[in-house]
Length: 108
Image (cartoon, rainbow, N blue to C red):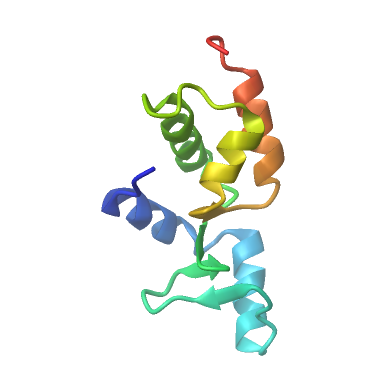
């Protein structure tokens, strides 16, 4: 999967104001960062992966569609798609949302 600069810009722009990510950012300023790091571009990353804001349903949908509908993957199942996507992205309940997305696929 290729992450385009515009997708990255959308993710980064959506991070401020996201309740979960705002709490994580506040924890970072208090020295409680855990697996989360503030990237040099100002975005929050989870173990190096882009943190997709929970409120950005269209971005998550776009990510899952691209990963699932690419001609190279031939509609991977939920586990395979999750494994592929988690290399680059993170959001709360991601595995569950990916499984639900694949379950709704009419071609699978």
